[in-house]
Length: 340
Image (cartoon, rainbow, N blue to C red):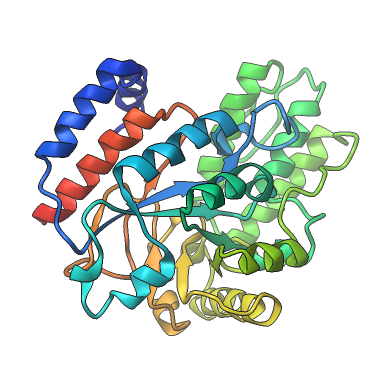
């Protein structure tokens, strides 16, 4: 769904009428064993709790997340990554209405706001970890650096950039500028993009206090893994794998897997492409790094009998998504996967 349509559907898909409508669609849907829907979350928090972090990566508030997980427990069959890997030779072992819940980037609120809810409901989850940040949680992601610098800036004149002047005078202008810059940076070489981030942050000025650690460290990941949370690679430094040379992309993936194996123990040979970028040689890099599965950010469901296992689709959950909308998307994804 395109963004304006999704926004309209999100407004409509609330309340008891929406629940009843989705329930009818669920009963009518042709669910088949072997079809898998995968949900993607990033952060679960109140947007105002960490104003220093990029707000667009908040997937749900804690209250909304609890409602969504309760919905999954009632109406679907949450499965673990181990269940999926065990069923690859016989995909029909995956039950109808199967849903895998995943988290990208290993933000700390997974431990405080999301995992306790899932554990209480018996819902498995997998977190894709960019391991260089787990090794040093004090180092922020580039998008959070850029957001913090833009948010704190008192600059009144446009900011010069290779894509033209950037307006940072008002909150609305800053949000537009950040979105524009993020889109541009994802089209260029990774090292060049990071150099531009450094330059933009320097031009915006010192944001004041450094960004507080936002990513789970090794001790926390070991504790969560001991409680049943699955861990899997998300590269080491979170480059777009299609924007680095092939050998470097392979090392980013393999290094992330090795870091997790060394620091945490059991690790799933499943990659989440950073930012979902799987063009160029990214899929070949995943194959050479020994990944059995890899997930994208392309929307949809997966029939594991026929799907390209290094290009699995997921459903990204955003802050506007309420439980009925997610139910509707799961019906759509499951039906689409079953008819391919």
